[in-house]
Length: 162
Image (cartoon, rainbow, N blue to C red; front, top):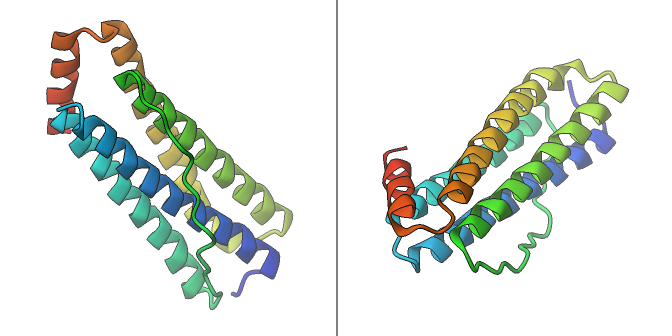
């Protein structure tokens, strides 16, 4: 069943957010690559790729329902990284923004009684809880080591295995 134009627009906004998040994660990976932290860079690149799969999942939902997905204008905020913790603070902010977009999508679908969107949106809600928790945990650990070289290298090594 085709969804309403209004809901299609909300899905398009979320698709755009996923692409923006992907590019932001890639830029964050560059920032840590420049600081010789290959494990963190690898983890951030993987997050970038995952955001693209999220966009694809939303696109597929729309095309399966005979709607027309549209990718909006991509904008990436300027970032300034002084400490490694800054990278993950930026990532956590981005995840929270994506989560807010998913919640708005849910509210719109509920208002329209669009039951066909529920499984897709529910999956994203669960995914975002996990994403925020993971980034928050990494950030918490980085704050604990407070820039200590050996602590950073340990976290870097752990993220390379993730």
